Image (cartoon, rainbow, N blue to C red; front, side):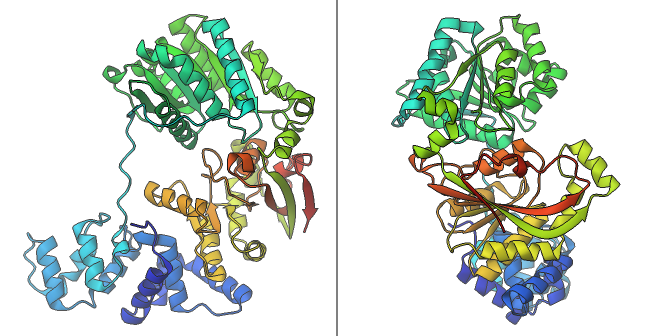
Length: 576
């Protein structure tokens, strides 16, 4: 079953809400946010040259909530359910009440609607199914069952056919295994590849081979990532590549992130995928499971190792030395290839190499790659050619004292200022007009200023383009989130708007445009955002990718915006 209503289901549900059940414009607006509804109506009139009807607002609500239209416990959702139940016959209401409130002594149907509207809504449960069917709504509005909570411990069976590495990846894998064989526990290496070059894939292949006999001895591969998305990406890669081996045993994988605990009696060796934040907190609390893992770690991988100079990693290494002694275990860092001024400069990479007294492992692709690795990868189809548009909004903002202080604390553009940008009607008009000017069916990732901004942009893009645009955030249920991402990957959705989630651990190779509506001074964040569109044709991606930065004149900002430090990264740049 689909996870999101199709256009026919949206049309039917909107017609029922407005024309049959007479749901008021006021309640529709409250369900969406009255202010956002007024803003959207104003922009639809200005850009689309039409007035938004109640049916249009209802469609906006349905696109926003999807299968969760009637889900939730807010007073407005309960009011919506109550007003719908008011249209059912007394006999039907009595039937529903007797089935779902059998212990109640209420006998008058007029008093049954209120408690029915307040029943707990469990997606795809008997009550939601009965509710939507009684009212004539498509069954999808009974909700979508959430994906079961991902297990803390997985056992991955050895099945499948091994995919082939390309030549330079195979070379890197052999170099890693050579260092491991030669240095053993003393191995310290840093592997560099341009973003999109397959660092995770190469490292997993090499360390599965290295760790295979050690897994049998109940040792651990400790894989450290920066976010839950990256942790899940690593698990997915481990699952695929272990399954591609002709091993006779399963591999146990532990999810040791997001506050999860691993029972000590369940520790029997395998791959521990974790976040540095969790390791730092557990090291401070002298966690028994972490101590047991460190004691028997056979190798450690640090993804995005340019961050390994931080105090969190220093604390972790101190803890590891207390348990294992100074020799520790093999440690390998993964980081992007130095290829431009700014982020990942050569001196920064060498600082990392020197910290671990490590071997620097990089592709042996000749002088051309050594001098200009990004150009080499682009010319050979591994990475897309990125062009850049600086879209001058003409808007001018002055940071307040509070925003400046907040920026100093957060290390980037203040969240309060981003909220101010998200609520700027003129700026939003410019963003919508520019995105609608893209060629139809251009797969576009939109990076919004706030969660609400992501949904707002998706609402307007859907309404004005006539095609469904999606929005996701960290609050989006996993089932819906995966479904929307899959629709985007399959080309069924042109615009996927987001805030704070599609930066790392997200793979949509056919992305052709990155629209950055949120300013940032963080080169790390900017690199991660742009990296979502860099996959080249040899890796299943595109030949070209367009990056649009919506640029404003921000006074009292201090550090320059990140895109200003990427001048030598683009294959072409223009200002609009």
